[in-house]
Amino acid sequence: MPVDFEAFFNHFSPFYNCAVLYVFVFVLTASAWLTAPLGWNRPLNWAAFGLVLLIFAVHTYAIVARIHISGRPPVTNLYGSAIFIGWGCVLLGLILEWIFRIGVGNMVAAVSGFATLLVAHFLADGDTLAVLQAVLDTQFWLATHVVTVILGYATTYVAGLLGILYILGGVFSTALQARAGNGTVGKMLTTMIYGTLCFSIFFSFVGTVLGGLWADDSWGRFWGWDPKENGALIIVLWNALVLHARWGKIVKDRGLAMLVVAGNIAVSWSWFGVNELGIGLHSYGFTEGVLKWLGIFVASQLLLIALACLPPQRWLSFRSEN
Image (cartoon, rainbow, N blue to C red):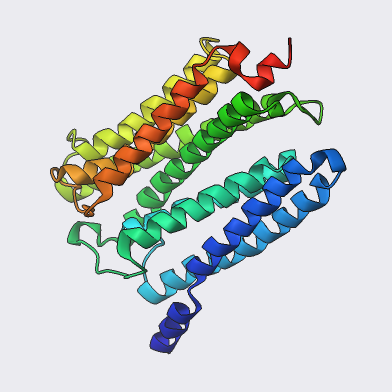
């Protein structure tokens, strides 16, 4: 019976349990990095990777269960967007860890998974499975445009999180110069950022185009410079700017890390900021108190960018080269 299954789902609280387990992944990964001189990093990283796989399976099951209960695609409100962004970030973290195997993918999965589930909890104080706004009541566009745009958010956030790891690891430790594979951790992080950005611009561009088609279907115009549409366009343009800056050698590794951290601000504005304006055809996600936390988050990202602007000789990783 659907009601019995929903009662079981609420009692099981899979998203809460996943959030708790992501903390354990963080501890395992951090322990692996701290004990690297003792040779414990490899088994601890594998343990963290195995735990992420288990949590990802539960996270996926929980999303599928919501789809079954609601009869809707995975993203129908801000709560659903948060848990799906987290799912996408964790998936990308698993892929990064499988390819590079230095613990960075595990850390990305742990931090992004916990943070997004925490955001989801405070957005609705639990899973409400609320009734859809009339304009959203369409299975096809929810399953195409919304899912694609959310994956664009997720990949852009992962690039930004990798940029944060680059900045913090470079300023406060010599981690960027540590040997890993055929290069250094710093070069691997840069490769991860670049590859993730390529996925970001693909999903954000395709999702924005699909959104225009949905707007044309619903309101008879492809583009109307609505705040939400502008927010989506900002993400596409910002990702394109960062990639072109890299291709044109305008920025190097450190500059790339700074730019992707700024991308976190662009995504957060499109995700939450435009809803707080209370204007436009897409303004149906206003949430009390979000503006304050959005401002705090933006300030934290600007502080990280300012930290990255320190001269190279003030970075422990770069100082170790001299």
